[in-house]
Length: 381
Image (cartoon, rainbow, N blue to C red; front, side, top):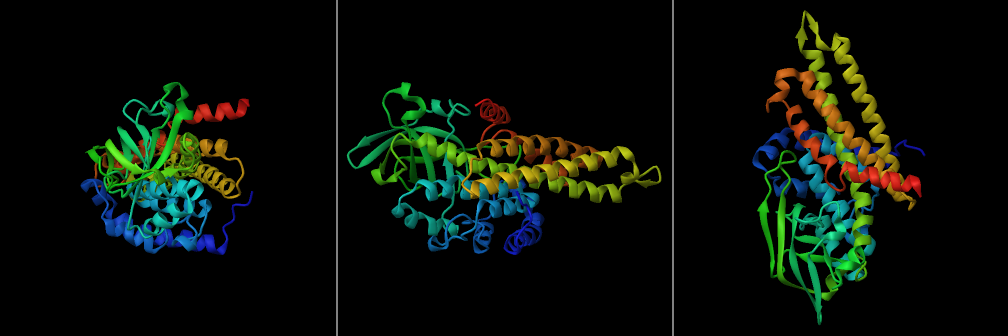
């Protein structure tokens, strides 16, 4: 598999890098402190084509692919992981299933607004009683003539506080024994009566992104809101998460790259015992391990993205990329703090934020334990 970038791919990557360095990096600490990303930031990203990367041009998108999306996500997350996950959910978890499973009316009705960031998307699968065990979800959607009536509560909804459109997963079969075979997917607008955005979570990291609870009480949505086939929602969720995992792996690589860049700079500037700490073998080995693992993680991400673009099986590769990258960034974010010593523990230096942001990559869109299960099952087939 060839990982050499084409001229167009290099242009996409450089555009993202320039935007990240010029706009995101100087304000990332502010987003972390205030717990929000100004809407104009997302609008600027939309003007660059970053909020509709996978959508064809006929729907207002960039007409690019998952490989380019991964390149952009690595650059954005290198500067600001909060912005990175906001972009990732919007592209991978909201727009991707519309493109794959949506009707033409759904595509034409929603994609143009999403590509311009006039609307922001969110993905609502997890519930207080179902996380890794998605088949145990209890939210229901009961058919009533030309509508479905939705009742239930979702939690940990990334983008929930700013979302205009939600992908909702609910149980449509009355028999709970159906488990995953009784789940359907829906597109629900924020304006739907009976939809309430609840508690905003105060998080360890990615604090600039909004994570909320979303509840539905006798929420009536048109039957045309169904995404894909009735009772076929679990497939929608899993296929969508395969792409989302590539995005989170790209996030992990981006954060790790930021750790390396900060550590290299500090190792050259900080002097102890009469010389830069980068002259000491203990520091050199940390930097060498960091750079090697980042390169390996980047290649795993790009392999999975390329396979997805080619329509080839990539469940195994996506899980490998996420598992490795998430483990890698947590180890090296810790090492980056260690290299910085005492100043690495204070908010004045960015590695403190990188350390907090890294942890979530082992948890959302499938924990590391789930990734190991996916990998092992694929190996044992």
